[in-house]
Image (cartoon, rainbow, N blue to C red):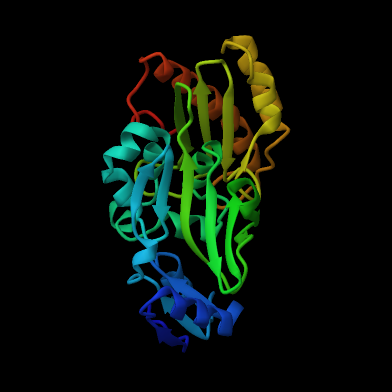
Amino acid sequence: MPITTEFEYVKPKDMDEALHVFSLYREKARALAGGTDLIVHLKENLARPEVVVDIKALGELAGLTLKGGTLHIGARVTFTELLESPIIKSKFPLLWEAAGTVASGGVRNRATVAGNICSAVPSADSAPALAVYDAEVLTLGIKGARRIPIAEWFTGPKRTALLPEEIVTAVELKLPAQKHAGCYMKLSRYEGEDLAQGGIAALAFADNTYRVAFCALGPKPARCPKTEAVLNGNKLGEKLLLKAKAALLEEVCPISDIRSSKEYRLHMTQVMLGRALETAVARLFGKGPGYGTDNIC
């Protein structure tokens, strides 16, 4: 399908030029990094920008580093780069596991982590993992820089806290100080490339505290404070899981669509939570399946 929408194409040589273009065009400008969503939207006339700003050459947006316990993921970093990074696999294995469920190998070669959360679709696979790691989104505009907690980033389906004149420069995560392990459990219709019907990320800590987040089970990805409150301070067991599942059902609000019914999602939400928590706790004690295996429902 050809692109029939007419627009200006700009490839800024530096960040100042990029910010100038966004300040001029605001809502009528779209950033091009991986382009896995934007190109499709242009072909289907779902996006009709006046200017497309190619940010792939901006060096400030590159880089995947861990310094002082803070992981810095530049806005140009792709999911393939995450998967190939020994830092991610060893220090942030839950994020590594979630990255492996994003679309296909070909898409992951181009799709960026920043782009995934900027698209803000409810089924974004990276969002639950970023949420349980308490990530922050770094933005920059002509009026200055901002740090936006991931909990405040998603404002609705395909909507974020990003201002029209801003661009995302990076995503940052703090490495938890205490021993922990996690699991991302994804509900799919078939093996291989598929959008999530639902997703649950869980982190379990040595002091019996937990973090839980979801995607595709509500209008936006989110943490689950009620579920965490039920779990925290307790050793995982059958009775605790039943209470946690009941609490989670109060925090999700799935819909029926082409991929799944609301009723099926509600049922599988409980299944995913149980499997994610049990796997995370098993991994915490050096047991259970390896990351990236047995995490697709």
